[in-house]
Each structure stands twice: as C-alpha cells, then as structure tokens.
Amino acid sequence: MIYALGESLLDIVWDGREPFDKGREITKNGIPGGAMLNAAVSLARSGMPVRLISELGEDAVAGFILEFLQKNGVDTALVRQYPGLPTSVAIARLDEEKKPVYHFEKHYPEKRRLMPVQDLTPTDVLLFGSLYSLDNKVRPELLKVLHAARRAGSAIIYDPNIRQRKISPDGEAWNSVMENIKLAHVVKASDEDLMALFGAQSNQVLLNRLMDINPEVLAIMTRGKEGVLAYWKGEMIERPAKKVMVKSTVGAGDGFNAGFIYGWVHEKLNAQNLSELETVQVKVLLEYGVRFSAAVCSSLENYIPESGPA
Image (cartoon, rainbow, N blue to C red; front, side, top):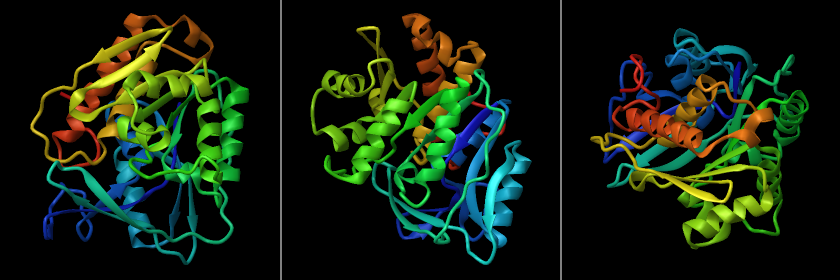
C-alpha cells in the first residue's frame, strides 16, 4: 500500500483576472487539491493502491472532495473530518510562466488528531511533506506515523515543497525540515526548495547538503524545464524534462512524486534493498517521474489524466 500524508483542500486557480475551468470536477471554480492528495490521485489513476492520510472539515466541500477521491480510487479511510468546521481553501494565481503564487485559508480545530495508521509493512511506501509537515499543531501526530513507518521498514519519501519560502536555520521549522530529511529514504526537492533552505549555490553543493544531513538518502532535485538531477553513490544522474505544451505547473512536482513511486513499486524496490540500487534503476525512476510530471503540466488538472500518463 502507498500512503500519502498531507493537507487536503479546495484548490482554486486564477489565470489573469478570471478563474478558468480546470476540468469536469469543479465546484465553484475549485477542484480537490493539496500536494499529497494530488500525488494520491495520480497514483490511483495509474492503478496503484493508495490511501490518503489527511484532515477535512465537515461541509459540502469536504463531501465533494471525498466523493472525488473515492471515484478516482483513492482510499479515504484515514481522512479525519472535524464536525462544524469548513474545509481549507488554497487560491493559486498563475504568473506568466504558469507557476502558482498561493494564498491559503485554513480551518482547523485547536486540537488535531490524525487517524491511526496500522499494519505498516516493509513493502509499503509513505509520501509526506510540504509546509503541512512543519505545522507544529499537527506535527506530533505526523511524527507518530513517520516513526511507525520507520519501525515497520516502510520506504519514506519526503518532498519539502516550501518553494521560495525562507526558513531560518535557528527556528523550529528548520529543525523539523532537518528531522524530516533524516527520517526519509528518498528526498525529492525542487531547486527553489533547496535554494530557499541553503542559499543560491551550485546543483552539486545543494545535493551535497542533503547528503550531509542524511548520507544514506537518495537525493533528487527537480528543475522545471531544465529536467531533474539525482545524486547517488557519488554519481550525478541527470534526465531531461519532457517537452510538452504547458497549460499549468500546479501539481507538477506532485506528479513527479507519483511517477517516481509508481516506478518504485513497479521495480519492486523497498527500503531494505535501497543500498543495492543501481544507477540504471535510478534513471528509470527519474524517467517515470518526468513522464508523470509532463502529463500533469499538459492538463488543467493537478493530476495525470484518467487515461494515465502519455
């Protein structure tokens, strides 16, 4: 089973002055969103068994999101709902390069609890990340899941997804990012993420910084149209981006995560044999990621098409 742990919300995207239609699953110009939800939908649409661990309010929007997830094959048994509260909303405005600038309206109770995750196994995969993983209101619950996955031997994949947000090295959020990297078997970060964390440095230095924190991690850096880099066993591995007509980059990184995990499962990899991973296998995993990401960018949804990636 693949577990995706993160925030779920209604995603409203604006391109220019007016919101545009992002497909059939629309409610008041919004679609189900959130980084891990996006990846979960792409995985489910590609035929993978996936379960979302998340939080929602208990309103019409929550009902819409749950119905959408279930329709697309995502298991929602671990989505907790909070009675009497509305569901969170993300408003994304696209710039000239179709990159989103976000504004969030979040609605959570003072005391939050994730649904308990049981029976994790070494063949399971846990994907988590984004600013949600740094939220001290839910972090104790998130850490319970991460440590349970570690004890079970499940593969843990971390996507910081902080974009250009600066995080102070002497702050609580910084410590949480460092802890997340240490707990992960794979870290996939964008170039914006790594420069926000470590400053504007060369690709090699940025990936080395991840390796300094966790020497056993498979370090991956996505670079938009410039492609993707990975650093593994002292070797830099590069794969080009797939050239497509970009309609929106919302969910592109989430699509890469879904493709990478699809390849991970397809290649029958697990955390126990990670040290045996060969360069050629890393290239295959990156290719899957690039393929899924391109499919998302070619769409006005946050996920690969229902027919699967091209």
